[in-house]
Image (cartoon, rainbow, N blue to C red):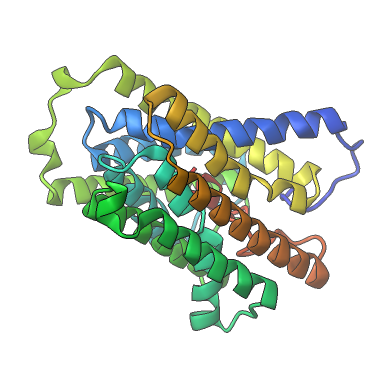
Length: 336
């Protein structure tokens, strides 16, 4: 498999194919917040996350064996170790908190709060790795924080559960930390599907351990799981994970990076609309205003960092630009 971000000599794909793939990413990853909310309705959140990523990870690992990625580069202990670090931060921490928080926080609100992941990546990158923050990114961060303040404060008047909201806010911080570790410190397989499979397995194992600590095994009642929750879980595994990531990898090889990066601010809009239509989540003036502010902020940050990335290396994926700093990681699932 050729590496994402490096164009081969094959004929370029048609504009229609690229747009079909983009719309697929918009809809698939925008809809996963809805699927999470439905899945955790009758499945304990960390058990759901464990099942989601263990099944998807094992399927992708099996595909990597068949495809020859494992034979070409058998994962080392260092790669497994770093996969567990990255997977724990991204999937167990980041996605686990989203699932836990969505027990009480509407899926559309969760999507909007998590959409500010690029802001957290930029802040953490500046604090711990001395990454340059251009003025437009700084403006985007400030605008994004204003949007969150409009959305959640005061918490009581917005009718949001404080504990669930806190989990949703912490989620992208953990995701950003894992993303930066992946980009700056981790040694991971170059084959993107193999790297993602390993991180999914690691994140699933971590989520299973957290479920044990939280006592979710004792609360779990298989006979109480609804058909809707099972469908939500299946959707997250097959569509949100395998199909979504496969489409994303193809886009990285086939489309301009700034165009691919647009999913970072389209997905929360999709999630917001789907939550209102399918789950009847309320849309108030406050949430509409906050959504507009947050989406503008994300667009500013993504655009600025995409330009900076292309200026330094036109062939390199935009590290820290969108919730996917490198195609060798499971960041493309962020948080879907």
